[in-house]
Amino acid sequence: MKKAILTLAVLCAVGMMAGCKSGAENQDAADTFAGSNTSNIDTVSQYKETEDIYVDGKQTEYVLIFRSNECWEKMLHDLENDSAALEDFYVAADDLMYYIYECDQKLQRMGVKYHNTSADKTVFCQGDIAYVPQDSCDCGVLIVKPGCQFEFVDLMDFLYGQEYSEQ
Image 1: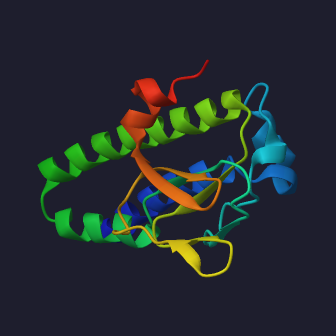
Image 2: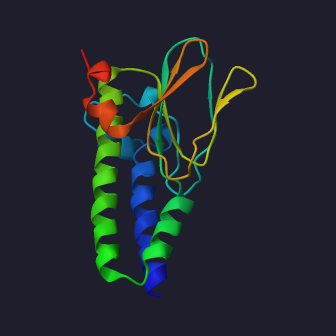
Image 3: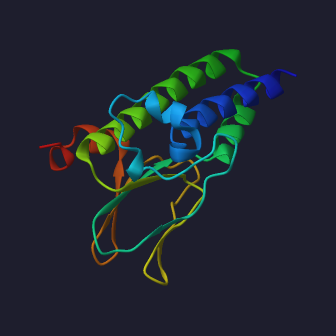
């Protein structure tokens, strides 16, 4: 029972983050972000799996990648019998969700074309060129430059690195 409650809590946290990106399907969720630019947001339903991303490679596009549901479930399973480690896990998960939210907000302020997906999906660019995260627990921003040049950037580097700062 405890495992089911813990899994539900993590899935709800991931679902809430995905639900905020539901664009035209759920305008009320999009309106919670003051000044959000929902035309740049992929439609992701709160209870659906994320999807593979397709970019054209003609302009710079960004893909905000977050941990997959399978990653969260495995992490919870590994900690289910250690209440102290489980408490630390929830604090760290909360922090991670905050940084993902901050990256999303930065992408909105930048006014760039971007997408959201989980780390168990693939980003396709012009035919056979694709980026597959190394691990389903990867988190970061994938920058797809013209000509399908991929650059994966850690969340913190994207938020606070000089190269990616807003102008």
